[in-house]
Image 1: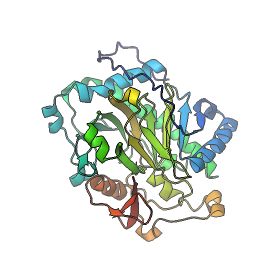
Image 2 (image 1 turned 135 degrees about the vertical axis):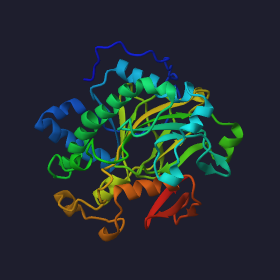
Image 3 (image 1 turned 30 degrees about the vertical axis):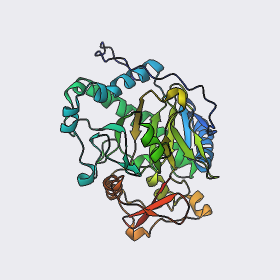
Image 4 (image 1 turned 90 degrees about the vertical axis):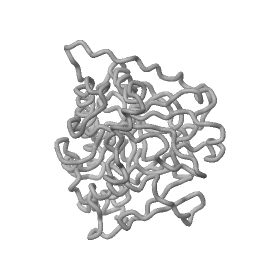
Amino acid sequence: MPHSTSIPLHAPHYVPAPVTKEDLNYADLAVIDLSKADTPAGRAELASEVKEALLTHGFFYVVNHGYIQDQTDRMFDIADIPFSGVADEEKHAYAGKMKQTGSYQGYKLRQYWHIDSGVYDQLEHYNINRDVTKRSHPEALRPFLPEIKDFGRYNHLNVLHPILRLIALSLELPEDSLVNVHNYDAIGETYVRFMKYYPRSEEEEKKTNNVWLKGHTDFGSITILWSQPVAALQIQTRDGNWRWIRHIDNALVVNAGDALDFLTGSFYKGTIHRVVQPPPDQQSYTRLGLFYFVMPDDAVKLVPLTESPVLQRAGIHRRCPDSEAPTMEAWRKARTSAYGQTELKSGQDKGVEEEIINGVVVKHYN
């Protein structure tokens, strides 16, 4: 468990919203107890649970990950600093150039992504590479960089790697098969994200049918979301319906993305999820998010792990020929540059829009 003997720097306390009392249609997600991963027998048990969770929903909770509630609360306090502790002028000075660079490092400012019917987003996020020295940061955040670095390292080594070992075991591969392409010190874009959604006007809600972020898949291998109480995240279940994600105190919400889809020949599909207006009793609150977005090392070519006996038995469905498969660097740059900036075309299925990225069809769901 991470700890420090020094007195922590003062950070204004972020007070989260109360948990909703609305009766929502929640998804029934598996809960993975990561403390069981300390033994071979425990990992074998968890690997089976993770396999079922990824095949059923592509989302699952993780508990007993090593952070206590006070440590999680502290990280949410720090996560709010780039939004409540930095003036708009300074935010613009540290804005990322996503379209030009294909990198989210720095701020994604409000009203950058087109949502629908001429309405643009009302969310900000600030992204910090696990190498916190990769670029400069707003003044208010600089004293907290050591804690952010420790948080990223903990997510990578103590949460991500154990999960990747479970996924490898579920594919009947050597435990470190996926760990070896998600190295902490390798060149890549795996990063900590702080994100804040702000309430929208009634007119914006009507024009977008209350959708704040269209249904999409993440472009990395997995995403780690530290659960927070404002209900807004939904997943599209296998029956095509949208289900809410329930908040669990100090739990992690983990989902599969494009890179895992590529690597497993669509055995584990990237999970379709979206963000919508919160229920009535939470609509006046902002929604603060704390994430660890995970990608394989930049140089990894996104081709199926054909040596997996599980994939051999199930059949491998490639999204493109191996010779044309992108590297992780090429895929994340293309997805980052295009997202919310390109004109989408109607797909064959109702409510589905499409774009072509690196020769691969990418779908967005409304």
